[in-house]
Image (tube, rainbow, N blue to C red; front, top):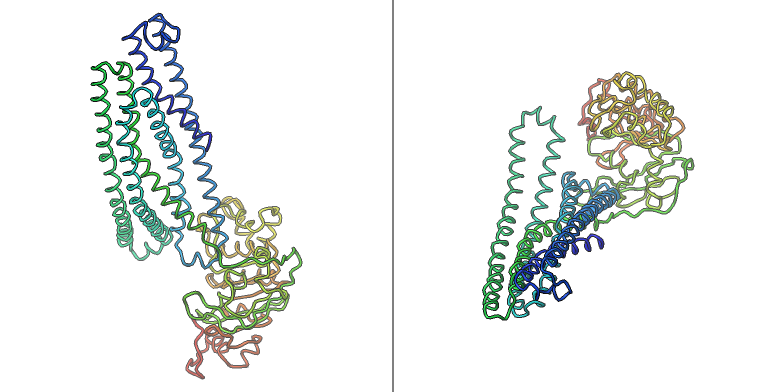
Length: 581
């Protein structure tokens, strides 16, 4: 930054110098042997002209050199800062708890990480250089003015305080308007991201016209706040031009009278006339530069707000070394509610002995998936405790906790890349043989080999080039490859056909041996061999036992089993709540 600032200042000094040389040329032509150059020992007039020519070449060469150097320095600085701010902000965002993302749109965060960071880069790329060169011009030209004619200098600088005062007022009024512009830009991004993510739904309901109207309305609000900012920013330069005209007229008229009455040299007058523009005209760009500055500051404010957002969850200190996790899980009188909602779980107690398979069933909204979030410590319990091998989760290092758990979710997320990249996502250093072995265990190897490029096939954004069953089996293989002590299956087979479900069940039975397994399920046939089954109802444990014990108890589990096996059941009996979704 220091080097870039020096190059900018020197570039502006060399830019001013030709006007002084023009004054020297006028002085040589008018005064000849009595000129300033003659006083330096160059008495021949032609030699003085040649000397001026040589100086002009040097000045122009230096100006071009410093122009190149300042441009390179500022633009590289802008790119470096853009890169570092974006990476730091993204890294900070990843450290925030999952609840933060549930309350905010992806498009809004994208606007900060991309658009706002780019706005900061645009100011450094051009605006910072303009500010330094304007300051250099005012100081340098002002010094020349006071050396040549203090009285003219005093009159010529009168508009400068007016311009500076107007610029400060302008800056203060533009700040809130540009903040509104950046906020609305985030709304546009959020709406676009939401609509593009649901393009299949939009087309299936023939809602293209309605969605276009929705985007148009959001974009119109963005245009409206921009118009409010443009109206004010566009008025700045015309007002400043009036102040500049006053300063120029002072130099032109008062200096001209001084020349006529013999108190000012013609050469000095020439320099002052030329430099008046150099002194005042750059100030017309001050409005544009400050406009760019305010846009950058509005964006910077949003970036810093994001960086100032701290996670409410504190990492633990207890380390879990590789191979040291037995996998014993205990939910001890756990209650949980989101910030503004009713309780989701109430006094839930359940245990998963190391190496056992435990299933959790219940109706939609009963709290099954919330158990998974709490186990992975995506959120902390409101009361009670969750323990892993006797350690309460907040005491554990979060990275170690999550490395010990392999999650297979109903909503499989695959990254844009190859099948191999997605399989090795949890273990990027895994050998290809290990990847293939995990794929075979998940019964995915055969269909992967049949793809166009096998393991090097690109799956598309979110894995859209693959079927639901294929994505699910890749997700299982991805979890297997990390060899976790605990396997969590959250509705892992609910969105696939019977044949695919059978294949997935075979692979899950193999990979769940000798490791703790938590199965969140809707289809009871997939969990009938679990060591223990918990039935959740409205956030509470309603029943627990083995499959046979729960059938014999004749409660809600038994009723659901009859429904899923085709046997009718009256739901009004004993006030039972239906578990069918």
